[in-house]
Image (cartoon, rainbow, N blue to C red; front, top):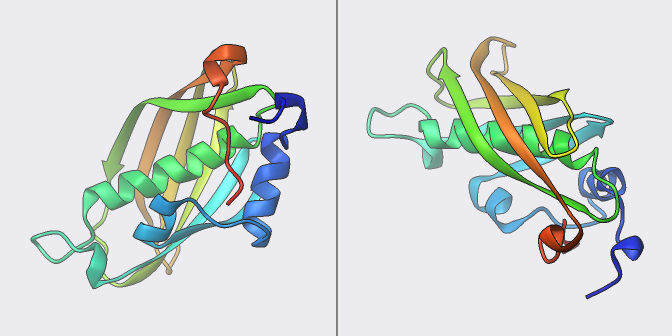
Length: 156
């Protein structure tokens, strides 16, 4: 494995991801979402909700909302990482505010508090009419040194 100092910082990685220079992770490809913009402590993720994302009631499955929110918050966290750091989600809470069928969704994640070990983030998900359809908060753990080994962002 490369020396952590040789790995891109989280912001460098997220910029490569949003520019298309590197591939999105397999889970993002499976669900159909993509990071489209990123800055220090924030990230934007897009998803075209379709029949593939339906639950038994015909609207978008709550787990898809949760994954989209986790991706936006995770991207925001990722933008703050330095060479020897990684992060993982410890907890996620989501409020579903409006059902979604076929719609272009935008999740906007941001860091509320970046700690040395524990951080708090939030995400808001909007439909194509800019209605707030879900709101989420998440707690993240920052890993470094040996704890981060093998868990860093992977260029694909």
